[in-house]
Length: 168
Image (cartoon, rainbow, N blue to C red; front, top):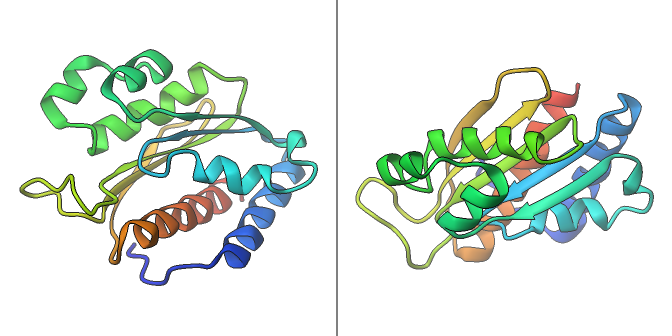
């Protein structure tokens, strides 16, 4: 799935409200594990009054060390596959559920730019993972266009859309 539109703050807020309503209706608590978005998903959901009924915690884990300490990402995974990889985001989303009281989680890792690109991983490369407690993690690769802000906004939107689908 490729996301091509960049949502403004109002549209992101509306999407986060939909996620909140779906999670609350199903008595699910959310945890976020964010790298390239730096806590933006958590910010969007905590902008909603009453989110304490469905939001448990958010972890912004940017460095390798933080990914290991906060989310249990294995050093070998980071060494062999890099921070921006399917393997890493799968461990991040699983780790978010292990270290929290949440029942559903989303994790993101990517290259928002303008620097950080590597061969095979251009700016806009983002992995998003979702998981419900007791289930299997799902990860999806995205290639977003635009500047740093646009890549991050599209990542937040895609993360929220995936949560909405998983909560359904």
